[in-house]
Length: 154
Image 1 (cartoon, rainbow, N blue to C red):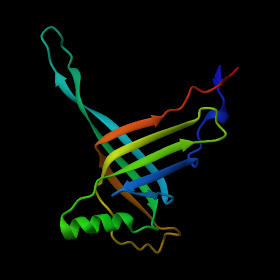
Image 2 (cartoon, rainbow, N blue to C red):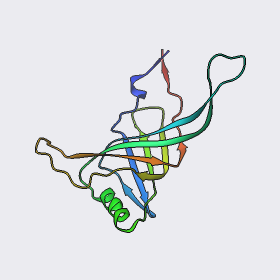
Image 3 (tube, rainbow, N blue to C red):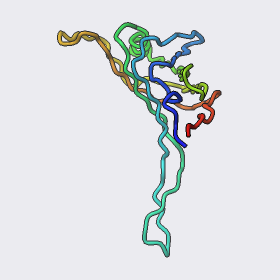
Image 4 (cartoon, one colour):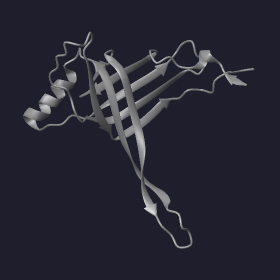
């Protein structure tokens, strides 16, 4: 049994949407986007065991995205924070769906996304295409659609 190459997911066969203040923005300018959950763990030392054990006690959601420098949306959110002190939390929905694959689609919603840093201005005479990277945190995750098991080849 083996995984059929046709069931792998193309990185270009995806969509991303930001829902900010009730408005849905298609994030067609995303080059890469990654949201990661990391467990927080406490070291636990007990009698009778020389090694250190670990107990999960929560989690942290962080992410990074590289986008083409073609939108002022995130700069405006940061500018709003700078000028008024009002911070914006929003959701990002990522859909992975490759029609050539038998595994269907996966939808993940990162909730309570909050930007860490934003490039406010940029020029680069060595760059053919301007890009920007931004990091963020998020507070919750939902997964309304999940991949199904692939059809295995023989």
